Length: 213
Image (tube, rainbow, N blue to C red; front, side):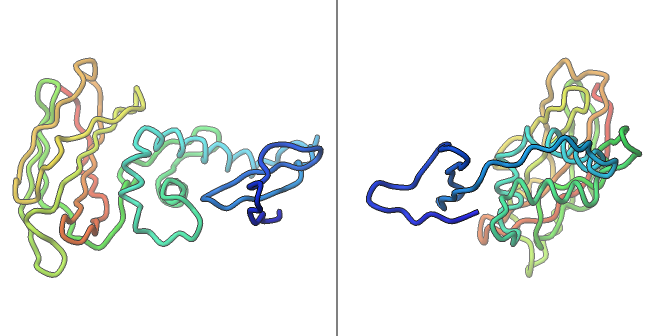
């Protein structure tokens, strides 16, 4: 694959004969069409494809949040979303092909050195969750005004609910509203902080699962 340096007419884009012009992160490339193969995929290839598809399906609903949560991960030319997918592939898939599942306690939506949520309790209410925690401020890696993100995942619909914005570490409690049709379903709760002062993030804290009342 060759890199194109823009001339007076701009970079080549599209298909011409056996070549394709495209761009990624403002860098233009030209490459040949892939050679088609009739060779059946190996068992290992099928396993990897199934794991990748599961990870992508799980994370797509919160792709925007991952741009923040994994935004500071050193990843070369890979995107924040790709870094999050790789984390799922490495640590958060369980089962035997083709029956793979997300291992929810090991899923992550953020990465960083900020102090994580601590002493978290979750109580299910009517289409809501009441979440409380300790204001565990450590001067070197946590601040009272760190912003809290809460993500609540419903496996049945493959969707997330988010906690209210502008909730701070010092708030020590928050009510997260959930869709009424989630009643009776088991959901998984994730939390992480972002510093308003430095932009640093905490690792994701898995707050467990609850049945929605």
